Length: 364
Image (cartoon, rainbow, N blue to C red; front, side, top):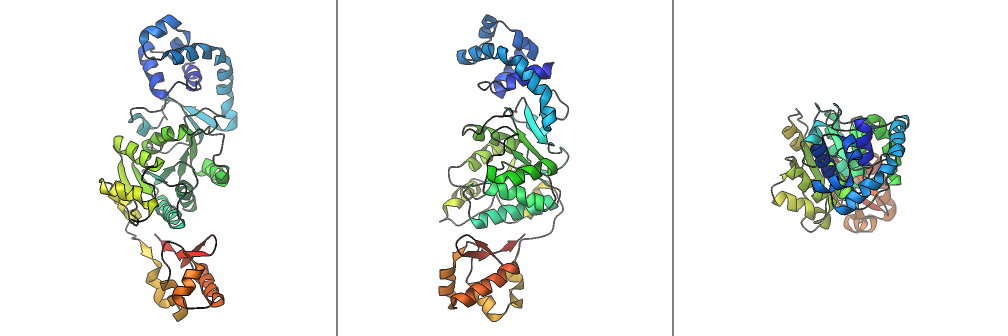
């Protein structure tokens, strides 16, 4: 019964986890909160008037919430609370841990290291590739990958972990029964089998702008370390890093060009004391995982390329360049240049982004 009353409280939109916990500490029972008189509730001084009014009115929704709670299991969703033994221990170590988590799939394992990988939604092709490679390398060493299932860096992090057949977990800013963004639906489906989808927001909750900064504390809270790959100077990724720092997590950032606006956030974090991450080994060493592979660039094998292939490859950079610029640098015609670029792409030396942009591939 206590979990049913807690479920009812967690479904009240204007009541946050800290307020629910304070009420519980005062009344020592979630059922007692349901039965409390309005005058006694006011005497506690815990809630504002608008919250008190909403709580009293919300009593009418209890039977509906109870029925919903009893039915969510049929949808493959669990409601995990601090009353349960499998509530994540890492979350209990943060001051504003959620009083209820909706889970589709499973929770991260306590005994296995976990890293949160976050970054810009509008990332570069290079940043997306790095996030995917870092995640793949970490997951290959049994490190759990946590992110937010957003487009850009988040999605790349989840993809990399899945490619390595590792466990990855997405923390949503909406209900776990809603995939946001829809473009990541394939990832959303796979993660329900290889890891899990988590949210503190009730099922059916639509994504709201104010949900995402709140969910960031859970992303960092579930992890042992936070890795930022491409972030603007003011961004949600830096909020996650700051929350992680407050929670006592180790912060890592991938450095970038000082002139690149997508790297300003990462460079700022490094300037402020975050660890510079140029290889998964930097993170794995902190986690205590034995891992000796270093960042390997394809230049290692360039000597095996033909003369013109080597010339075209030398004109590329990790930041994609347009075909016209590559032709101007190497002096080859369009037909020969495209043919060589296609061959290099097929052999894994380069990657192609939209609109005839090509960049050097890297392998971690």
